[in-house]
Image 1 (cartoon, helix red, strand yellow):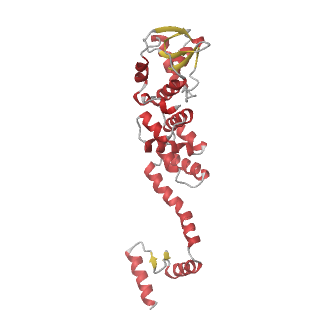
Image 2 (cartoon, rainbow, N blue to C red):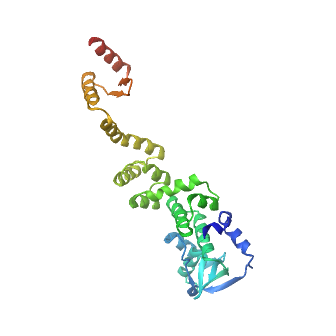
Image 3 (cartoon, rainbow, N blue to C red):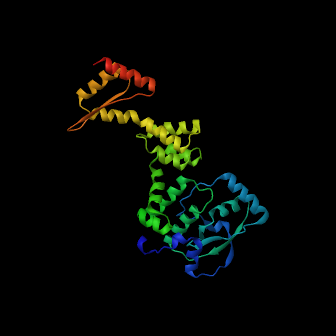
Length: 282
């Protein structure tokens, strides 16, 4: 179904409407005859923003008609659910609307476009919109990127947010952390760690760059354990012996034909101490 739809989606709402060649006839429709777009990926609307719009509608009315499609019983809202909700809140009985002849597929597309064009869209809501479109229209990431005028890596990067635990998704929804934080947290090994570190990000007002550095340090013990498990027991034994003798970190690595002993020092004073120890051992 999805492959024969063309590329109208990436060009926005006006392009799709103009392709239909329909007249822009504005009608006043009873709010009681309307129902929300069943394909709308957004289900929550900020109450304070709705109240603000409602107050404006009480004074000025609805300045831009909503877009609807005739259904068996009344009309489906295609674009403008926020104006519809605010009008109900304002106590209005009717709302200006333009009736369009649209397919279910076009309704899905338009619902996603409207959602993506919101100024207050957060990264997780954007990711949900891409996932919604892919699921409903059976699109691949490449096809979704092509239809929306985005790059495939951009779509793939946004969709990674869907892999976060719900507790971290909630923090993004609440704007306590950013999408960049969320994607960086995916570098941790467990959901419990992601949640724990996410709260650390909030408590310490950590930037994404600072989080990247922290996660590298956070993961080091586990990476070290993995390396030691692969390392022969006799090398681990000698590493520990040299650490005790030299009082610093020692790393022994061995390949098929050669090996290497790395001794760490953090200052010139420590370097001189280690040299003295090695010379005295001769």
